Every structure is written in C-alpha cells, then in structure tokens.
Length: 443
Image 1: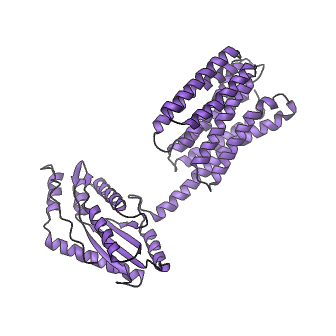
Image 2: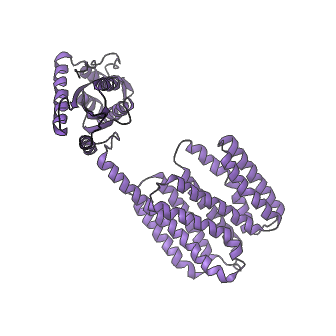
Image 3: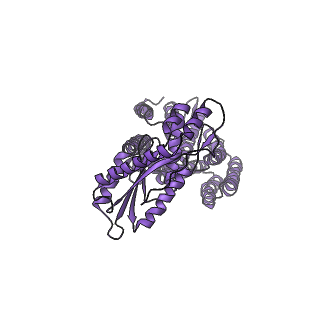
C-alpha cells in the first residue's frame, strides 16, 4: 500500500464533494457526466494506492487503473460532444468504439502481451471505427482519427512495444477530449483554459510515460505532473459551473424565464439606447404594445400551466414573424411589446404590423385543443408621435388600451363562453369560433 498517494486521494475526494455541492445549484447533464468521469479517476487513484509490482493483486489492479483511465477519457469526450443533435447516435458510436480499447488495456494490465492477440484486437477496433465513422457518423475526420489511433498501435505491437501501444491510445483519447472541450466551451472561459490545459498535459504524460519509465530519475517529476492535471481539470469544471451560473443569473436579470424573451429591464435599456443612438439614415423608431384577449379565462378554466403554454407559444410565434433586429419583449402577464429600429418610412412599419396580425392569427395548442387568439395592439412612432422614450411608451400603451375597449364593445364574449364549455367537458372548441383579430389601427 503506497501511503504517499493518500494526500492526492483526499484532495481528489474534496474536489469531487465541492462539485457535488455546486451541482445542486447547477442540475445539468454535463455536470453529471463530469462527475462520472472524475469518479473513474478516483477509482484509478484508489487502485494506485494498493498497486504494487510485487503485490498479490498486481495484475487486476493494473488493468483496473488503465480501464478507469480509458473510461474517464471516453466520458470526457462524450461530455464535450454531448450537446447538439443526434446525441443518442453519438452515444452508440462512442460505446461501440470503446470495447476494443477496453480489451487491449485489460490484456496489457493482465500481462497478456501476445502480438497476435493485440493484432486481432487492433484490427477489430479499426474495422468497427471505420465502419461506424463512415456509415453511422458519415465523417471522414473520425475515420482519420481511428487511423491515427490504431495504425501506430499495430506498429508498436508488431515490435513488442505493448506499453507504447497502450499509452498511445490514452494519448489519442485524451487529446480528443481536450479538443472536444475546446470546441464546446466559451472562448473566454477561465474554466475552459484549466480543463483544456489539464487534458493536454494528461495526454502528453501518457505519450511520454513509456520513455519516463526507463529513467527512474524522472519518475517523481512525472508523478507530480500526473497528479497536477487531475486537479486542473477538476478545478476547471468547478469554474465552468460557476461561470455558467453567473451567466445564467445575468441572463435571467434581463430575460423572461417563461418565454425566454427580453423582460422589461432589457426592453427599457434597448429603448433608451435606440433614442441615444438613432440611425442617421433610418431614423424612425416604432413601439408596438400588445395585450392578449381573454387570457384570464384560459387560466381560470385550464389552470396556470395552460396559460403558461399559451404565452410561450405566442411569444415564439411573435418572434418568428418578425426580423432578428426587432426586440420582442414580455413585460409581464399577457402584455408584450415590440421595439422596431432602422425604419425608412411607415410602409415598412405597415408590413411589420401585418406580421404581428399574422402572429395573433396563428392558433396555439392548449390542453390538446387548437385555440385561436386575438389581442389589442397600440402603435406609436418616433418622431411622428413622440420625441422621448417615456412619451412614446405611454402613447403606445394608451392606444393599445383604447383598442381593447373598442373590442369589448364590438365583440361578444364568444371565446369566454367557449372556453368555459370546453373546460367543463360540454363540447370541444371549434377552432373556427374565436374572437376576430381586430383591424389594425391607422399608422
């Protein structure tokens, strides 16, 4: 038992506990995968404590340590590449291509160092990697990676250099993990710098290990470096979680959590900015206030979840009908606003107003039923209607409520009765029966 490794083990346990504490406030799948990878590194650390070249469990502990390194590296690769489409296919791909290296590492750990055995395993690994890369992943880049991984291993095994073959595989896997995190984490992340640096150092340690093993004078330096990268990536992972929490808090401070749209604070900032820096050639600024009709009846009849679904769907519909440069915000309740900048003339605004009417006319699905909605819209334009942001906002808001009053006089409360009937199971809402979208006010 190597007691000198106990401080490293205890430090690793403390860092994992810190990650567990941080995870409670950061419940993402990526964090769970990081913890799984670090637990395999912890398993390797425990195996190294009991590992002895003359001990009774030398071979199984050696195989366990190598397999733990392999699985941890694969988990780190999966963590880096997990986001995006076809995640399940990527998972199958990674599992399929882990089996052959796992058998190679186990054979080396148990000192089954037979060139024929290694050649068969290497050929099987390359065939599986090539087929899965071309057929399932459709990636020549992955095919090139498998060639870089397996062909040198074949050469090493042919010359009886089984240690070089095994640690070359670890070098390739941890290099790919470093690349995965380099691609997936934000460019200015301090945690990213720590993680990528740690994984690169780890990969280089694996690459140099067969050479270092021949020179006992360098073993202690190599051992200290070996421990350094474990702590680097663990600290880096904690930093990434904290950075994402800060970014999430900053995002929530300026966005509506329900719809993901800008909230009142961000809307007011952009409105002030629009007036502070008006475009010289496109100097019209328009503000549209929208208030949905009969939203309270939806909440009362179907519950707040249905109301939340309606707001989310309408917010998405509204954003989808407008330009990327327009600001669509939810101010609260069922009230939305749109800030339009860079307009040449009112004809452009008329097209945008028509897009808003289209969004209002797009049905939403609530509790399995398709419902048509409507709303009141108020429009105010700078500099035609107002010359400061406060006046422009109040004018658009007043016009919206004026139109809402006109709708109450003109339209019977058809939708309210229909929602009540559907909520009590008397009949299904006829999508054709809904309050009509009121005509656009004059611009």
